[in-house]
Image 1: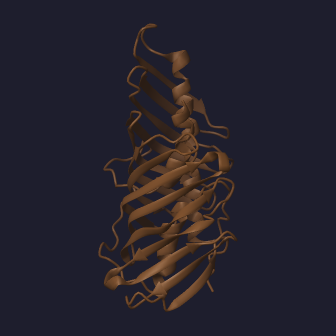
Image 2 (image 1 turned 120 degrees about the vertical axis):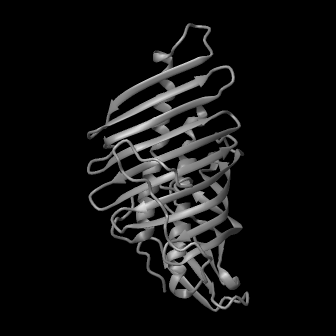
Image 3 (image 1 turned 60 degrees about the vertical axis):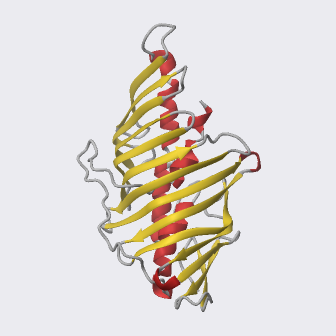
Length: 320
């Protein structure tokens, strides 16, 4: 089903969602944001923290991150993990042809399967679809599942929906490798169906993501993203609106003044402008560039004039 082949973009953008009160099958505690919940005043000093928490959610997840490059690339690593979900969902869906329940006239087609990871562990999938109404439910559970050498996944994700809307629930889904460990908990709701040039779809996320090594949790709340897909040209454009919470500072609101351009073969956004607004109308404007950098313009006194400008490099996290 083309729908499942296209979930990757949804999953990449959907790494943040509302905390769900359950633990994963391996007993890992769900990610739970417990930081400052008031609106932050944007400053030059904290603007990079908010840029990392927000801008890196726009990572296409297509290339491997340098684990030593800083917080931004650690978020990118997590998104690549989430991006692996579609092929697993597709595996569950296609399995119904050989493992369906009911006779030839049955509307409900179901399958379940447990497979070994390429380098260890197991992944268990369960999937049911009504081939008349196209309503579906399913789940994927991981136990030390190894997709790439040195990494593993534990926990679960469930999903339900139809051709109009789908809901994905993450139950303390954890990714770990030699240097990083992340747990994400929450939900994302998608409206519309990706699949071809000209497709437009929207999803709303509320999710907490915990960096298990640093003991830090980031939240995105009521984040609405609208995606315009131009697959024949190799890119998508995205708009964002919602709140980003940083445990130490609090939250800022996010708005898009120029849609973000994401090329499938590039790790970072190539164009677009986001504005993050804090208390007292303080703000930071993030402009994505095609050369692997982004520009930060910072208004620390809320007078709508940007007093400070910095150019930041994605691969190093350095700003000058």
